[in-house]
Length: 131
Image 1 (cartoon, rainbow, N blue to C red):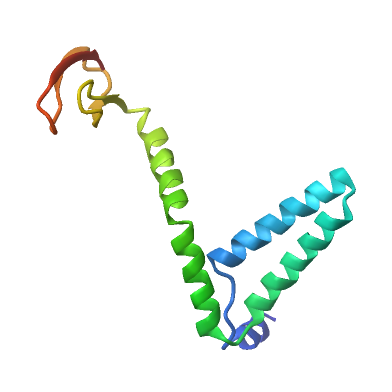
Image 2: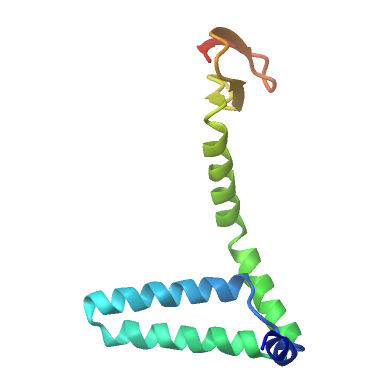
């Protein structure tokens, strides 16, 4: 069975980041349409699902790849912000993150060192904080 699916998908584009986004948006719209009983949201969700499957089974790989690249360039800043926020939240267990009072540069200090004097690497301002 798996070999048949692999053979069928050979030469087709498959699922990418843009496809995942449209599929997740379609599921969210389906849930919203079931709560609000809106036919328009339901039709829009179904249209997104059909478009996603059209992209998955498409043989025009270059066009689908260009669509995905356009999506990735337009959402670059948002994805970077989410990745940076996720990284900072993961580091909060082991480090404090302070801002320099003069130049607002972020400075990462390890936790558990007591009261320490911090020197900003950008403007050489020193200030005292608890780590």
